[in-house]
Amino acid sequence: MESLKAKKLRDEWGTKPCNHPKLEKEYYADTHTLDYVCNQCGKEFSVLEMLETRETQRKKRKMMV
Ligand SMILES: [Zn+2]
Image (cartoon, rainbow, N blue to C red; front, top):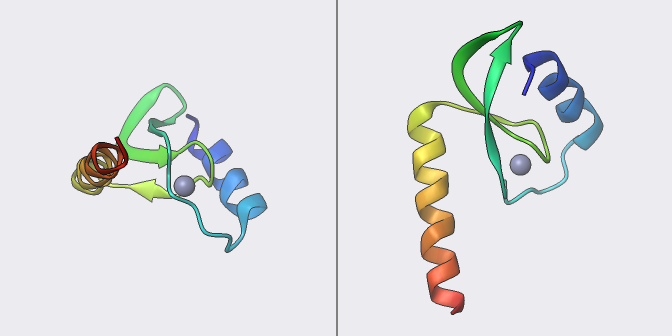
């Protein structure tokens, strides 16, 4: 996702809670910024935060099954 689009998402999303269902690579022009963004709320994640969030969600899904 374009970093400008992510910023727009963040502005539109405001302060609502989000469980960050899907994280995408963030791009500036055609270059990966090395960050990830939630495609729902636009929050930015570092690679480490992205991995932690994915791991947390994986555990949550496991618990629900
Ligand atoms: Zn989110």
